Amino acid sequence: MPKLTEKLLSKLGMQIETQGSELDLVCGMEVSGKTEYKVKHKGRTYYFCSENCQKHFHDDPEKYASE
Image (cartoon, rainbow, N blue to C red; front, side, top):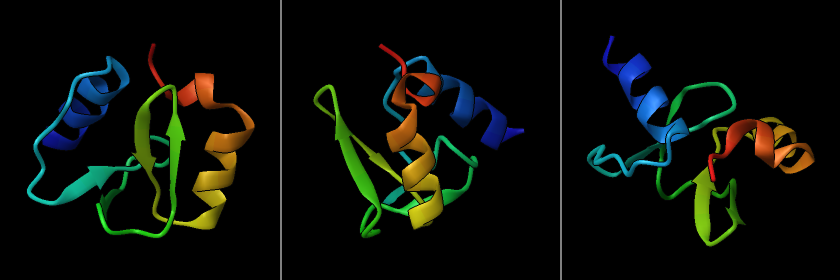
């Protein structure tokens, strides 16, 4: 259940403290904040587990990112 809560809070634009990890909004997986797959969008950095998830976000950021 904690992962669902993290995903919901993240979609609402709330910052989540996750002990050095970030949430991939495309697949819901926890990833290291040091991942090479990241995108800045509207002043916020989003992190991804793979190039594929990064591409999905890049193709339609509004689907995954909150205002």
